[in-house]
View 1 (cartoon, rainbow, N blue to C red):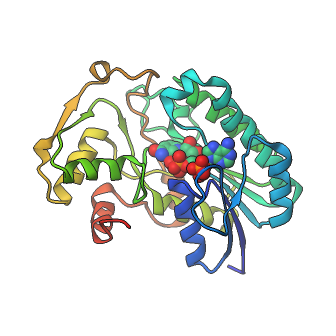
View 2: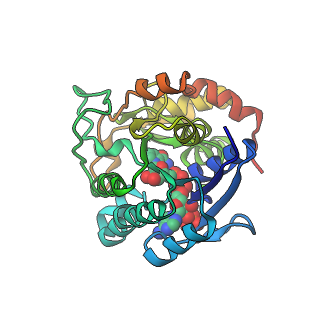
Length: 294
Ligand SMILES: NC(=O)c1ccc[n+]([C@@H]2O[C@H](COP(=O)([O-])OP(=O)(O)OC[C@H]3O[C@@H](n4cnc5c(N)ncnc54)[C@H](OP(=O)(O)O)[C@@H]3O)[C@@H](O)[C@H]2O)c1
């Protein structure tokens, strides 16, 4: 691959910070944006809901590829704050697509498994399965997927429960609790395919490098509940797995309805990249080697 200029929108987030790292490792020129959490002096402030600012940042940076990870993805809060959810996830995606098109950049847009209803008889879903989101977050993300198709060159990647080493995500929270010896009660009847952030980040750049356009599922290979995920985490890190107890979705009582099994089949992407993403058991081993995070 020749030299590339990469713009990572949402570079302060879990997925975005991993894309920044993957692009740095490739020797790319990288510009990362943030909205509220400035993580580096070189990062650029950008709110995708502001069409003019979005267009101006893309004009100024003139990237070859834009990876849009910006989202309002607090699933329950999206039920309450519908305007905000729509403006960031749908209108924001459209603003990015218009701006990317204007500078002839390839747009890689990160979506979600929550575009599917998650009926167990239907899973795992492939890219040709019809979407039908159960909650407002999923509706706004699907609207975002449609909006980015106004760009000339676009790729939508759909991960599922993303995990990695960064503050504020489920994995680091769970490890902190286990380390403190606290008991955790984790839902055991919502199944997905947890996705290791560094694998997703690499894929966001590889789809550009290989000229892959359209929709791709970009998730881990193993279906499991969050409870099973957390027990595996405790075992790998040598914590007492009995600290982790299962609870049903009904008893847990979340505001937004959740898919029961939103597992994605990522075969199309794995074939195109000639590799699979890591399973949680393999990923936990590499996380353990760099734990504790700074
Ligand atoms: N995390 C998951 O389990 C999961 C699962 C499936 C799909 N996804 C999708 O993956 C993508 C990345 O998620 P993530 O886990 O990396 O989220 P995250 O850690 O919360 O990061 C979100 C990023 O978006 C930025 N952002 C938020 N609102 C913005 C706005 N109006 N304009 C510009 N930037 C804005 C944030 O900036 P500041 O922090 O600076 O405010 C942050 O950099 C999202 O599209 C999400 O829907 C995530």
